[in-house]
Length: 635
Ligand code: 6R9
Image (cartoon, rainbow, N blue to C red; front, side, top):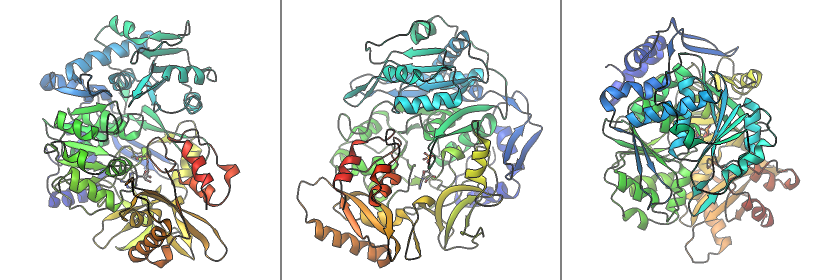
């Protein structure tokens, strides 16, 4: 049982050293001891970042659903695999055991086959956070169809773009979805999208909200009757290690979204291994990740990672604000959650409403708190640590990407001492480095540069669907023989990493490179501030100057804006230096956010630079309405 579960810091360093010195032996042992294979590999790793090409466990055969489901039936058949918590707190939660999951996935897999889906076909899954979403995903994997899950909050045009790019033969959806007090007409969105997609032959529709919907003859079918008639046995397809498991789209800085392709064996090994260690998951724990399965966080850490470890994983259908801002904590109490994984944007939104709704619930079950998606600012970190973790549950600030498939830099809880705003040390097997603009590696500590990875890890995305050239240009061309993450980072005096934000967010003011995260951090510490975003705008003397968009807390009292501006700049001066002071500070009602909660700085940058006729596509935003408000109040 060596090396699979790291329990103290010495062991981390020892295992880390081995994983870096002998990566092939290291991953071979993990793969051999902790997964089931139909056939073992001929070669552990073959790679060449100049092509680029990466292949792990070549020659091996397996099916990931056997690892996530079948192998647990001997010892965990009656254990809850998926615990579904509905949007409405009065609706009963649903416990799906490993035995039931096995039956449901097999039934669904048979329905796919009956509808002419074969190994290698692409299936688009546009389903809200209901059990069918996880089941559909696993059913595709069972028969070797490549799933492309599209977050069920995207618009018809965003959906159509993704369906066409992957040439999907089928769409799986639902009549509609519940989101807080609202319902969303998903099937209507699918119908609109499909007006522009000729590749789709079949649409399967799950019933969730019981709305009247349009069913197109010959194309659309209700899912449930098909499932009811399907056999609960479905032989898992034999997959090669490098067969694609899924495509997941991530937005690029411009143009078309990138369909990142993840393959079977390496993705399975890495998502499972990181899950076990980063959450220190123990057999009877109840684990909850609040992400949507439409994002990589949900793929790796709601579905595949937890299930490969035989864990109990919670799926929550609703939103943190419904019926009130205490919902997360009510769920933690109700299901006695042990590991809780969420995003800084959610923490800030909840913190805005004070601590009353946190203190109301019993959170003593919590052992580990996670953060993912963007840099967690210092204030949010402390709020999370003090009020949710009661200073007893370590916070793991996990840095990773859709492209990396699994966590890359993160503390291991109860192992790595944490430090606010630091993702700390590389995970086992990960070899990060920092590069300067001239392509030179920055050696030693107390350096800041562009974050790259030197050596492949098992779950690196293998290509962009249909566009290997773009994959090469985006990730392997900036620095020779290295994977470039697009993020900036610094390494402190003990070797801990802090992510400073996307490199395209770096602003050069009078020749000084400034990351957005540390400045926003300083602003957010002001007691009146809820959230902020910084962008650069052209300046005659400095080259670029800083423009800040600041959202104030809802305290009911009115504040003098000029005084606040002075205080904010004072705070920045103290924390970072006068060079980082803002030239303009606009108080706004909201910030444009992507559906996964990341601030869309591209739009803010254009507004600050007075390029309003050129805002680009705002339709995929969570809150497109704030854009006009920001424009109207521009300084
Ligand atoms: C998992 C996920 C990836 C980008 C990444 C970085 C930012 C994610 C972070 C973080 C600082 C963290 N990011 N986690 N920045 N600290 N803990 O979010 O994937 O949606 O592809 O986003 O998100 O900028 O490059 P994805």
